[in-house]
Image (cartoon, rainbow, N blue to C red; front, side):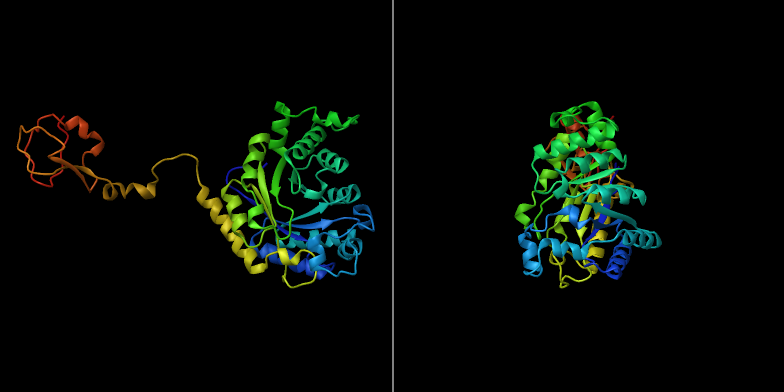
Length: 363
């Protein structure tokens, strides 16, 4: 669970290393230097991710070779178990948290064995029940992306996740059983303690009119769960807006160079953009401040300058009744507040005033 105004920023490297460990090291360095909290890669066994005849997505076709299959493309980007160890060591050296998205249970088990601090479930795995259950039963914090899903699918996923956290050893006999804890006190407390749900539009890049940031609030309202945003739009404006709307986790794809070959580079931001975005996110953290409305110490000195006091509009003789005709509100504000004008109207002045003189309390 994330508290207060702190926003966890995940720099999503994904497969933008293009299968080259040195590129992955550079991505770690860039993310750490930019001030990201976490850098995230993708970890999978290609044979356990997709069938060999699975077609490419349209954005993958646009940005990669037409002749290769999705299987061949992803196989090139597959990280070995030994690579993960090296990447974790590099992250430790650079002071940034390592994270990788598992796409199968074997990869998940390996990541857990390496001591990852949390688990990130990608949008495409939101219906992968066994992976969700095993992730929850790790007892690690979980971040769930929700691209391509509807509210019912999110409900099912969260129901199963909570079941996994609460019932470590119980076998599931039917799909309906995953709803056992839905909307109970334990459901809400478990989500609040362990889970963050990320709104996401799974298009690369996602056009602005498809973002629907208000969905973040709807998810938060329905499930009373910490929320965040996984950003696939161009530029930085949407990520910054999500921070102002209450995102506790923000994820953004980045690359060393948008012109590199590969499926995700075109929808990613470059190092300078990443640094500027994270700086803006930190500024949002700062400006969100407190829920309590009060006069701040830095403002108090401006009260007498910006506010007004009851002032004699014209000469007022002692014994003359105060009226709207002989009173006016003028700066400075170090006299009687104009909010008290009705206490004066109809009362007789106990002294004489020159034009422009501040009125004194008559009691």
